[in-house]
Image (cartoon, rainbow over all chains, first blue to last red; front, side, top):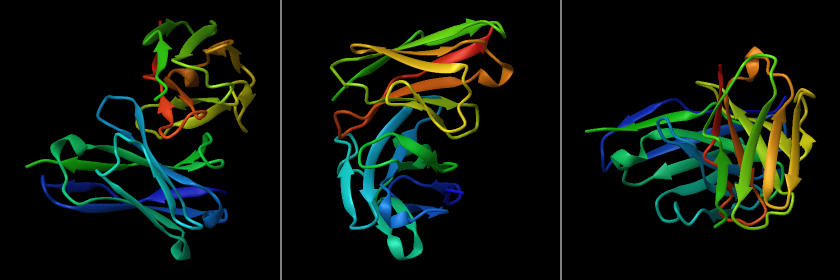
Length: 119
Length: 108
């Protein structure tokens, strides 16, 4: 059974850094692209970017380029999303998601990680 | 960037009735469109890809269609578990992959 299990909720202050994770199981992690999707409170879905764990090839949405860093460690089947300096507007639920192949639809989703940024 | 526009924003339907949700792309996305369902407090779930292909586990009452840049998700007879928010997503021109704003299907 394919599963994506994300790390727990984070509460941070503006300017702090954070790295959230997404561990895949039930399939060959290196062979599928993993994306990240933001959902701000009460809002819709926004695609942030994607990584291929096999070679760490990464693509970003222009809206998120330079704002976040996506990475992966295939040895432990885990993808990451990190911020170096959080803003209050980064408060959202972040989902990791497996793409069926490069740039294709999302076939599996993680449970989401709530990141709250407040002074 | 391809802009996806969903309508209506909210659809009020009685159980057992038919629901028709629309999604329009700002430019051609071929049939590279997916539909997702999201219930409160849950992650989205894939329903349909390639505009018309049901994902594994998607009930037959869900169907997708395409006419040019207009896409439709039809739920033939709404069940209680179908009341949720539905999103379309194009994956033809990326990055970025883009979602529509969502249609909330609520009980009438």
